[in-house]
Image (tube, rainbow, N blue to C red; front, side, top):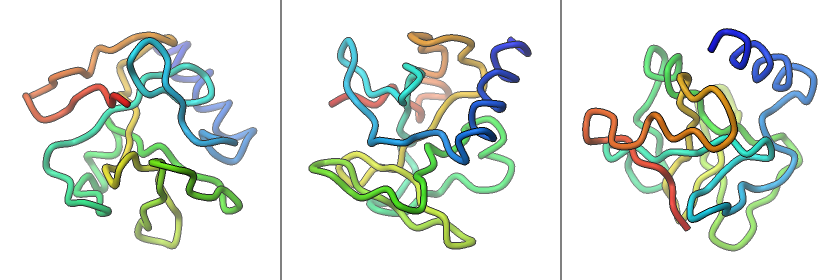
Length: 119
């Protein structure tokens, strides 16, 4: 798990973000450009993330780059500090820190409030 997390973090550092493009649908779930599963949080408000600080350590936001633009059902949600997070139909999108490889869905139904994002 540590190896994959380090690879993921290095990729984020090199690219400056997790995405160059909006998320996409693969096998009935939304994923980032690396095929990592994205999740939604039941406690979020439309267009507003309720996952902050400690929460983001386990559920990193699907960050958008400064030049990314909303497209179709994919929107951008303003975060503290002026950064933006990808959202689907207004629901902010997140990664699960314990997913190790593309296709993992280990965060699905975590505490009955985290779910795989589906198109």
